[in-house]
Image (cartoon, rainbow, N blue to C red; front, side, top):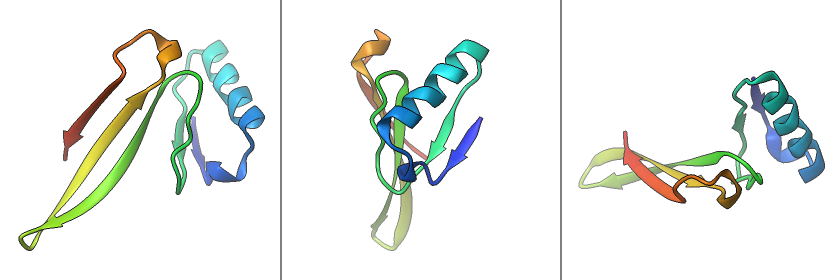
Length: 77
């Protein structure tokens, strides 16, 4: 399931979406202008950087503590 403009929803609504996706065993992908910190799952932030006239896109991931998996990681795309 894909959700755009997720920043318009309150925390309870986002939690409801996570519960629905968990029950249906589907992945929820959220697009928002700011970082949403759910209780479960991983959030990714795209950071655009310009270095020596080259543009780079960094993908930074933050995994919640509730998931029981490693806490953070990052990659360069």
